[in-house]
Image (tube, rainbow over all chains, first blue to last red; front, side, top):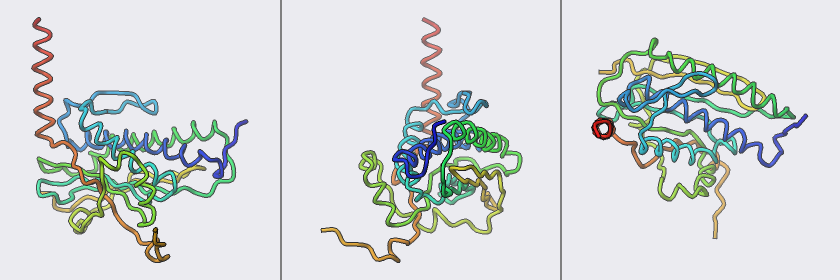
Length: 210
Length: 45
């Protein structure tokens, strides 16, 4: 049986690949479910053996890919504490925040088979929760947009700067307006604990959206 | 020459966001309409 350990050179990379692939699907699905973009740009696909909606708009897809490409080195080094998909109103004030809290537990050893099948099963449950989250959230006002925030540490940003795409896709420190939400309602969606990653997803929803 | 960060500075939590913004909903809507027109023209040929 093939076993991997945290010391393996590519272990962090494997975890980052798995999580970034998942986050890509999750972001597309959030944008569809929360109606940030017209439903006509989304096509049904199958991911984690469940149907999901993925955008076919080239510019939007590239934006999501570039974002995740920059976040990946942080996840690889276990330096991304939270990845947050923020939906903002016309005035660029957050109305909803989908918070992915990520941590990688210490690992002794794990079989490669377990790594793939078990994690996929857990991620599928997240996707299913996102696809029905509109039932527990209030409608968003028209004209919303989105952004992605990453909670990290100052020293970790050096890992980001090594990424080639960062030159064309720079990042800045978020200001209060992008981060702060007044008296949000907290809606836990899903949490998972596996041998390689712990993740929790919850939504913070602004009390008054209009 | 690189200056070493102090431990407190290295541990400072920050929140980052991309400078670039994603395409606007209006922009995407226009693209969608143009694609529909193109597809109906292709069908009419």
